Image 1 (cartoon, rainbow, N blue to C red):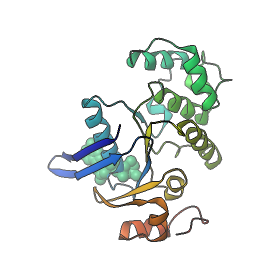
Image 2: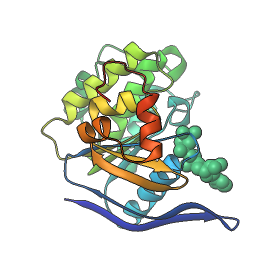
Image 3: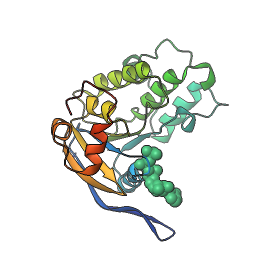
Image 4: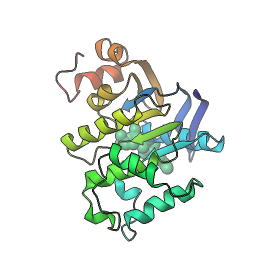
Length: 227
Ligand SMILES: Nc1ncnc2c1ncn2[C@@H]1O[C@H](COP(=O)(O)OP(=O)(O)OP(=O)(O)O)[C@@H](O)[C@H]1O
Ligand SMILES: [Mg+2]
């Protein structure tokens, strides 16, 4: 199912946080939402998630830090059960094993609380939880920024392999153009609460048109990128 949300906007205390914005994603499409800090990426992510959920679209949201998704007083098994229940699903060992194998956390102890798992493992667990209901869209807001680059790349690689050939679309929100460029086929650039550029990844990297996109390309992290 193509995901289309038009006229998304946000305002707080008379201040515009998001100018009217359209977002379209094809089934299985991977799109990056990049832009400087404060440009409105997370705001757009939240408005998109709320709007689509209100319409009945199945959308999962992975926050920046696993701390936002995991209660330090509850076991990992509790979190998993709670996520299944929230989706109205009965426990399914095969589904859990499938996701745990995909995210390479199958050997971890579910009776433990989050703090006895590494942050990288916690974030993989949160991503696995987000995929329980086979959502139409997965919105990830800076999902790996709290992880070291090797663990971050490993996690994105596992997610990439899992999502391949599936219908779940991905919106990857990040200020790291290098990270996004590696995993998405299209990039949307935000500046001052609006999308100012929307182009296939290779084109945006080779010929950025707006000031915001040029600035991101000029300050990319991964030197081998051809922009
Ligand atoms: N609930 C809110 N109330 C008032 N202002 C807000 C609220 N949420 C965000 N803002 C403001 O909206 C603007 C955009 O914020 P947002 O968090 O969407 O940016 P961002 O691109 O995600 O930044 P970052 O890369 O730092 O995460 C910022 O100026 C922020 O201060
Ligand atoms: Mg943000």
